[in-house]
Amino acid sequence: MKIKNFLTEKFATAMVELGIPADCPPSIALSSRPEFGDYQVNGAMKAAKKIDSKPRDLAALIIEKVELSEAVDKLEIAGPGFINIFLSAKFLAEEISKPLVSKLPKKSIKNIVIDHSSPNLAKEMHVGHLRSTIIGDCLARVFEKLGHKVIRQNHMGDWGTQFGMLIAELEQQIEEGNEAEFALNDLEHFYQKAKKHFDEDENFANTAREYVVKLQSGDPYCKSLWEKFINISISHNQNIYEKLNVGLKTEHIKPESSYNDKLAPLVADLMQRNIALDSDGAKVIFLPELADKNGKPSPMIIEKSGGGYLYSTTDLAAVNYRSENLKADRILYLIDARQSLHMKQVFITARKAGLVANGVSLEHHAFGMMMDESGRPFKTRTGGTVKLNDLLNEATDRARVVVTEKNKELSEDEIRSISTKVGIGAIKYADLSITRTHDYVFNWKTMLSFDGNTAPYLQYAYTRIQSIFRKSDIELEQNVPILLEEKSERSLALQVIQFEETINQVALDCYPHILCSYLYALASQFMHFYETCPILKKNIDVNVQASRLRLCQVTSETLKCGLNLLGIEVMEKM
Ligand code: ARG
Image (cartoon, rainbow, N blue to C red; front, side, top):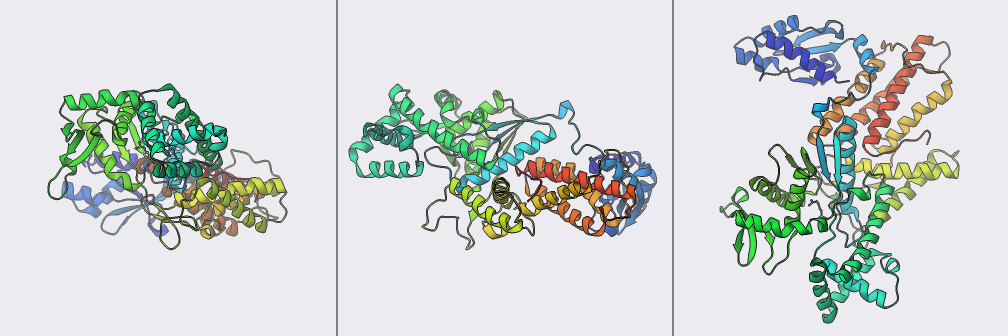
């Protein structure tokens, strides 16, 4: 189902035949109002200018030329030279019977690397990691659905000065007779203890500093303490991924430490080619492309004076690996907007130094912050960072209250499973449905509401359809003709067939809210259809009934598939 592509092709052919140059495409868009048809051609005005003809005259010629046979009921010229397209019911019915997503030709399959989640392992995951994790997961699902090869990369921060302090603390606690698992049971608490030690105890601080150096030069004792720490931290994160229903597995972890061996040769090479320069003992790349308003180039340090590599050095090694080893066509970074300068520096350097192949697309998809209702960064009541685990548990608890209220006949097992899907779904949807680049306000009440653009509303719409099937006990056939006589039937069908172009759009710009808006419109169209077109009433013509049930079925498949792309589960009832 790619209506827009289909129309674009047909109109483009007609326009070329009329001698219009190929750089004047038909520009097909959805019509803004039903009286303007279903789609419209916006490109005739520009084309007319180019070939020096009158726009409305040219539109008339295009209408005459284009071969759409039975796909449309009529084509109309409107305003200064738009062409309104009214698709035929026959065409809509045919399209709706095709698979939701068509198969991607082999030559169009791309390798898409998605760097997402990527928390630092020194601390427990907190709300700040939520957006990257779920937006990246949604994009991974969308690209996979379209048939691309997705390579998830969890660029975990497991290296750096903090780890000296953490392993010194772990050593001390083990010496005091604690098991590592026990000591690291609460990572947040552990980190705070280590930090306190470090700030207050000179000896401890010296050990910590010594351990970083030892760790980075491969000392087996420090490495084994470090590994203990890392493994527990990772398993904690994997638990969160599972709770969140995101697809990140341990095999997607490609942490900072894994690039350690590449850093020295990389810096040496950049120095040798004069891309990096010595500046007061540090090795720095100066980027005139990002100069400040006084013309001073933007500096990116890749080695500290006295030694030691940085976040930027690792990212240069990583981008090189992704291009050279993973053969990426596109590399997507889901990192919040505060790292925009860092990403620009990395991308410019990567191109300049030839660390990535020519055609590779480097994309930082930035996002805003999570705010509380008073517009401040989201914190606990006492001003601390909110642990992701606590947030997810609270979501399920709160969902339980709403779910139990809505349906008093559910068993305890059903309540548990539904509350999880609703709670987690609500959190994800609230985030994904806002334009990614904006900050967004976290509000339990709106996200868990059954009205409006929320996960519960969409999940509920899905269960409504399932209940129709349960009540109808009619064996549904795949090939029943779809009749689209009522207005609301037609609008619903038109909405359903826009699914594929919607997810193509998401894949292009990486904005998941486009899919959310689509699904919300779909569920709303369905509710309207359901109110205006009886299905199970007595005396309904059998063909009409079968057709409406088919419409219900494709709607529910589309809803389910779309929610799944957002990482949100559906259920039979709620
Ligand atoms: N660990 C980093 C942080 O928590 C995010 C890493 C993002 N990915 C990257 N390749 N830089 O800020």
